[in-house]
Image (cartoon, rainbow, N blue to C red; front, side, top):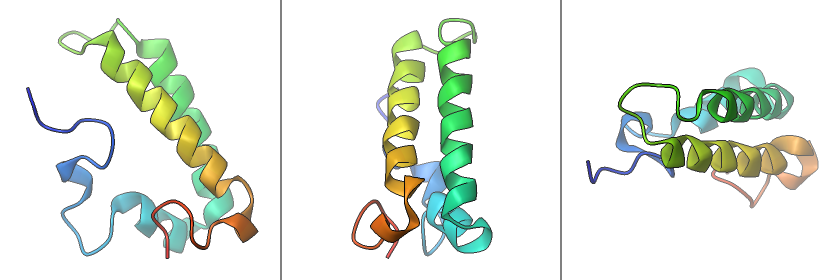
Length: 85
């Protein structure tokens, strides 16, 4: 499978804005920060345990969510960072 699975995959970009950006607008940066931390934990814990999924992909997803958590950690730092405008 050559399709992007971690950094902005197609299935999260089928709307005018990316799904994570919608989440920020609907739920706020603090909620998205917590969501990112929890997803990072989920991918770490499932790495190597989901049939058909390379553990490397799960670790890459964990890393992506941790990076995004840093973007949304402080609301005043969001403008001009990440994907939210």
